[in-house]
Length: 369
Image 1 (cartoon, rainbow, N blue to C red):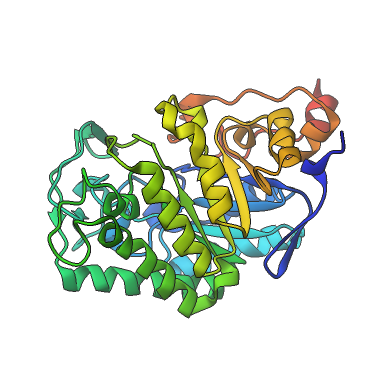
Image 2 (image 1 turned 180 degrees about the vertical axis):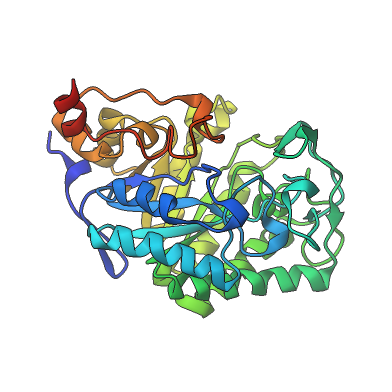
């Protein structure tokens, strides 16, 4: 069996050195919502991925639901991200930014002054949210966006996309998965609107498609990807009828817009209902541009997906945290290092670099052993 995983690939106008994608993972190291030199070092260490998709990044101030996550809507953030993209490009890596508006998943203590928790509808999420000031706090009830505000948020995504190109990113990923704002519009449990953005499946898809349209108009379809998670229940989303039909429609509409890729969280890995067994196939048929699968993959499983033609690229998440040179390790068949979950989102007493930039590459680890 040939190693498709470690062969090059074309993604729109750019060439990827391999088919290994570093999945977006929140790491909460951006003080003041601005990435700095430490963030640049972290991503540069992982530049041997065919494509890096950076952590969820807010396109406006209201989108900053978590503590210490980055944004991309002001000059300081553009300058911070330029450090990151320059560092990755210096190592011949390719890098997209993921735009994540948290919507109802957040807390006012995590937002800058003047920002607020907003969502499609005033439906409170269950569970709690970490705040640096008061630790765990319940999610508040969000304020429903007016129709005019929805249209403004669409323009915020477009403006952020232009800033992403200014910051040196090769493209952007729209985060319409995992229970954040874009998926909150897709799901009837969180979208109870009665205007043009709620009700029918077509109306519930309208916001995501208009965000895609505005982003394409700003930077081009060849720089625009999207992430989806049909059947996902993360962030208290809840199941609903007609998921496959709805996502087949959505994937068809995204293909019509010629997005450069669709990044799908494989529902087969999340104990979804039996009907989810058809989801990957139907979305793969509906979306014929680059198709990325993610969730719980190792090298062998990823290779099998590529061999079967179910994916063009495969994304890896947590293994990249503790294995900065993950593609090299997998290709060599080396044992992967385990990550320290205690430092995934929070700093150790010794500083933000612990559990972040201090994981050695394989050659360093062998040398010190």
